[in-house]
Image 1: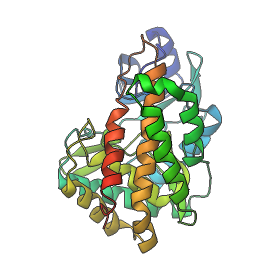
Image 2: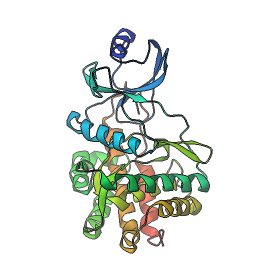
Image 3: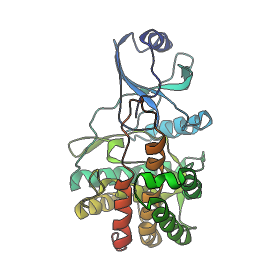
Image 4: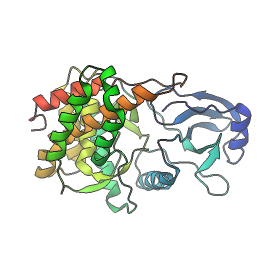
Length: 317
C-alpha cells in the first residue's frame, strides 16, 4: 500500500455517494507498500479502504483480482472483497485511476511473528489453496520467472549503484535458478506476495489476507516459497528463524497436502522468490518518485536471503 495519487476530499465525497456507505468523515493516506495508492476511509456507516490502481496494476487484470476475492469470500476465507455500488459495479474511476472501495478487515500486520502465528498464517495459505481448487479464471504471472531476466536488463548496471557488483551477482544466481526451475508441479491461483504485512492477525488468529494485486496462476508451491522467504528473516534479511520456517510449513501441510516433488522443489523456488523481490525492489529503489508518500524497501535484504538459501539447500527438509 502507498499513496502516489492524491484525492481531494470533495472528489472522494462524490465518489462515496455512489455507494450505500454513509457520508465521508475522514480519509488518511496509507504509506506502507509500493504498488497502489491507498486510503483509510471513515464514513458515518463504518471504515473502508479506498484503492487507486497505479500503472503497475493493469486495469484489464482487475476483473481477475475481483473475481478471486469474491470466490474466496464466498468460501469463507478472511479476504477483503470490493464493495459494489448501487448499480452492482466494483471497479470505478477516481482521479484518473481505476479505483475500488474495499471492505475493511480488523487485525494488525506483524513485524516479528511468533512460530504459532507463522503456523496460523501457513494454515491460512493452505486453506486458500484448497479454496481455489475450483476457481476457473486464469491470469499469467506478470512477475513470474520469464519476467526476471528482462527486469534485470532494464535495471542494468544501475544496480551497481545500490551495491558493487550487484548486477553480475544477480545475473549468475538467476542463471542457476533458470536451469533448475521445475516445469511440472501443480499450478493454481496463488497470492504471490503473502508477506507478513499482507496478513492481518489478532493474537494467533488470522483475520485477513490482503493485497491480492500480484495474484496469478502459477506453481502452487512457489506461493509457499515466497511466504517462507518473507517471514523467516528480519527486515534486513538477516537472523533466520528456523522455528518460523517450520511453523509455516507445518501449518500449510495441516491444511493442504505438499507432495514430495513440491517439497523437493522448495529450495529453488525460494531462491527464485528472492531474485524476484530483489529485482522489483531494485527497480523501485532506482525509479520511485522522490515526492511519493511511500517507503522504499531495501533490495539488499533479499540478496542476503538469497545467499542464505544458496548456503542452506536443506532448509525445507
